[in-house]
Length: 179
Image (cartoon, rainbow, N blue to C red; front, side, top):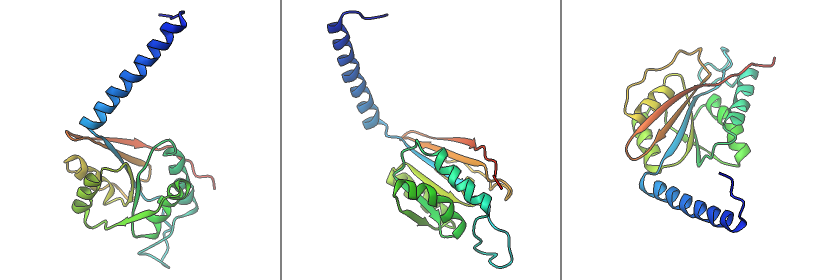
């Protein structure tokens, strides 16, 4: 239907805006939703010099930069990382581009951290490890998920939480290292 009358167009637009605002406002007040993105750190340098806290490889640095591009249109209230060089450096491009601080969490206390994430109600990015990221995603939705293989770097776990339910989407990022 094409509206040709300018007055009718104006009133139609006015009612659409008011009605749309009321529906959106009602939906936000009745069932607030948050979205949490969980990723494993990018590729780490495998060396005997620093086996417990290795830095990212050049490809890992590129993947971290690609994560910022992937999340560029996503509104984030917080960024979390475990306290390791590889996780902090994976979160760094996202944090720097948004002028945000990266908050640290204990990757060994996932149940407590899951509760904190839900209570805070923030849209967040959480950078973790192959043995913590899927487990935390599972805790957020009330399901048991197993760790992933150490060779997997391309998964992005999107957890959408509302009052009634949590829903998990596993996304696979496309990345080609430019060496």
